[in-house]
Image (cartoon, rainbow, N blue to C red; front, side, top):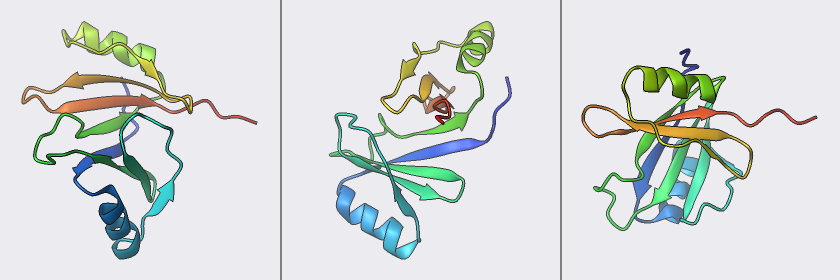
Length: 121
């Protein structure tokens, strides 16, 4: 398996609008397109990486909080992770075409493996 670096970090927030204003106005991030995912949030550009702000009524709870590794081939990555004895979620294709799966580390932290959407011409 070859990791291409951290793709994004997801942060739970109580007030998406306030948090977005902070990250854009104070830290200079840019707002990125985000598909409808059934929960309020904003995707932000931070150079080559992304920060995903996700609404949570209790940001100290971490069910949506995670970080994601970019990979070139999600199916190969899933096979390798399973070969290591890890429990891997079924792959999901997002509306914009990116594919992802999840595992948990030894401490229960959620890790995503993200294959970018195919380039369109």
